[in-house]
Image 1 (cartoon, one colour):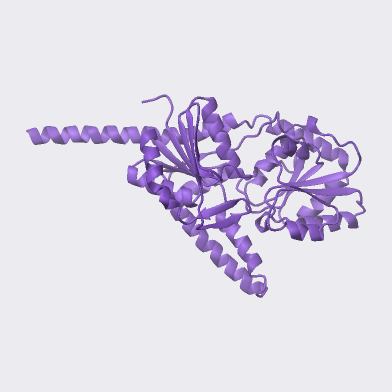
Image 2: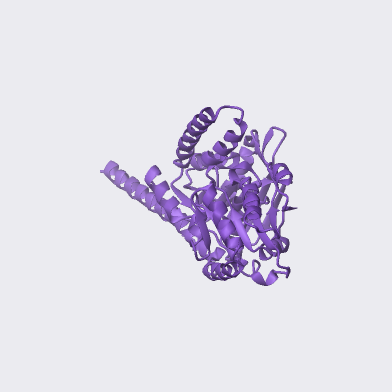
Length: 409
């Protein structure tokens, strides 16, 4: 047995701007940094194979039969044309586990090949797709009555969740970013579930990058600018701030998506930076005074940790993962309703000294959240599958030898 399990990672998104892609990139970097054998097969804009130390990456392009899911992400109905090539890559690499990150086309391929090749499957839960789809459906059904829309959305969300759980039930073990989600998966699937938290680079995201020195209040949002993120609440926040007498403020929106046009038409104080990466993103965080994240569908919220590392307090909702990243009244607020969310933003906007104190505490609390520590927990799941597989193989060998002995007698 080698010192580390050989991991094959199949993921839909890698180069894009989202939490799944960030986690996948960081996992690959972790494996390379620690010389862990890893094969990553993922979507890309160009075909290429890359060998980086102990890590091999196979980048596959999507074809004409693809539909847009996000502004920078598609689903390829004909990805199965790569099935033979992917299987050859897996056979050559000989993984101990196959790790998939969603029920998308790469995840489906990974689940199928794991079954055919009898390799343990690990599935990580990154997105509440049932809620994601429900929010978008709600927007599409806006022409219906409120009651009809609500019942249709509730039904679709229930069906989507059942399908999701059935898919994740194919895995030997699952991974989730928070303890409550780990427990929920274990209870629903009756299979082991492990913690796969997220890290943050506290050197890159740092309050020392702040450059603005004026007295204007800067609220910030970072993420997909789409319906499931609840971004239209930013317009209500703007109106509430003006009504409370706060006039000198800006609302910085970092990201892209279908709601950008609506926000530009409805935010008088809005500033739209588009998609930012690297140091540009770190600078944007550092120049915020308060981070606002009205999403109710995120399973974690990497952006909350990035804001905290930058010395910025956050206001989040009480649904999903972000609520686990904020200490209410200490590093920000967790709001149960839109009205409470808006009220907490206004409260903090009128107390700049408290905002600075909360931001400093938020950074202190996130300092230990490294990517290395996060992935050491992830590798516990890989080792569980690995050792279980070895034990099953040993048992089968023992049973075979026993049967052979009986036959000889």
